[in-house]
Length: 96
Image 1 (cartoon, helix red, strand yellow):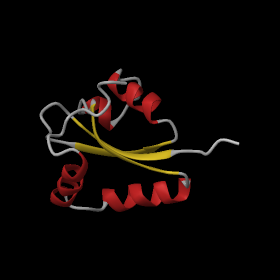
Image 2 (cartoon, helix red, strand yellow; image 1 turned 180 degrees about the vertical axis):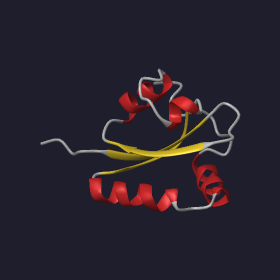
Image 3 (cartoon, helix red, strand yellow; image 1 turned 120 degrees about the horizontal axis):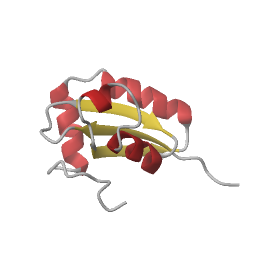
């Protein structure tokens, strides 16, 4: 039996002026959908195509709760979180 993996992730645009927080059960597929602009909405409108942060869990409820928690944070707190994993804000999905 395989273990499910759920990811909470943060994306930004090339100029780092906007942040998008989402949750998914298939991070590589979801990031590709954002990069290829296959989904209407915020990420397409604001060109959020760089994955700059993600966390994994095996519990979908905790992933959804974490997404809600992060969305409630001020930008400065989100920036501090991103810096813990990715201080240069590099696109973490470039090698995928």
